[in-house]
Image 1: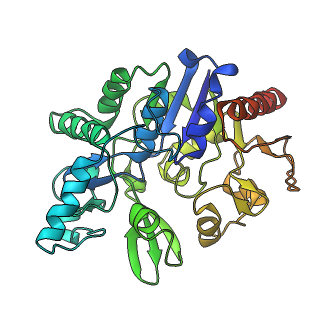
Image 2: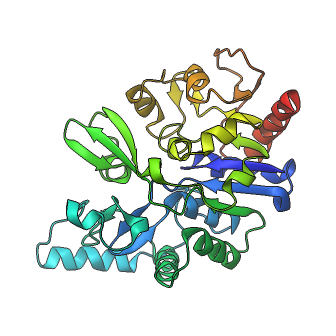
Length: 330
């Protein structure tokens, strides 16, 4: 049995090769929900959906988000309507009072859908409509995710980290913004002063998460701060990782992140922005998988390989290194 903690694109890429070492029927993926937003009244769960689409073999592997071959007519019409009457575009974070009204699961992450700042395909949007409708019918996020996983034919179990609202908020000199506004709309600008996981202190792990974390855990090459960090902030999850076998795959080659703002965000929260910084960020890890060209050293077992993942065969190679690392500490 093995459990992957997943966020962003790093871990989904790794999952392309997981079956060479781990049976899908004995694999669980726990997905970050700190990046979720409510956009135009629909709950969008980007990290859940990337795994959903990857497992359902419909993921757009050029972008590593959305559905391959999707159309964008609804998005285009939203833009046209806004332009026709000169409505403002870009991320429009709703005012403070509206952040805690409506669906509790969407607290602190509500955006207007006018000229929406995230490009959402039409088939992709159908998933968000279905998820939101299930929530409105009384389903928990876990139950809605299970229903969608069944619809896409996933062979492994997919769990959200929590059924409670946890919002990844980035504090900058220009004010506080949701992570999606910082990364998607502003392309990683401005400078990050710190990162907050609002709501985490009162959130609970979703049903099944702590049980899954009693098995061997793999942290894929996801952003340690905004992909894995929200999970660690939920009470009980970090403690569970202290008690089980954990192997972490580096998202860095030395001090260069493979993708996304991992280096900037690690520096902002006080970690060395490099592979070696993982020793502190993942103090509970029992072993690491790092690139063969990386000169980082750890006082814990370390397996080296080419950790770049461009094709499923690359993922299989890295999974082989993960399996080797598990063998060193199990």
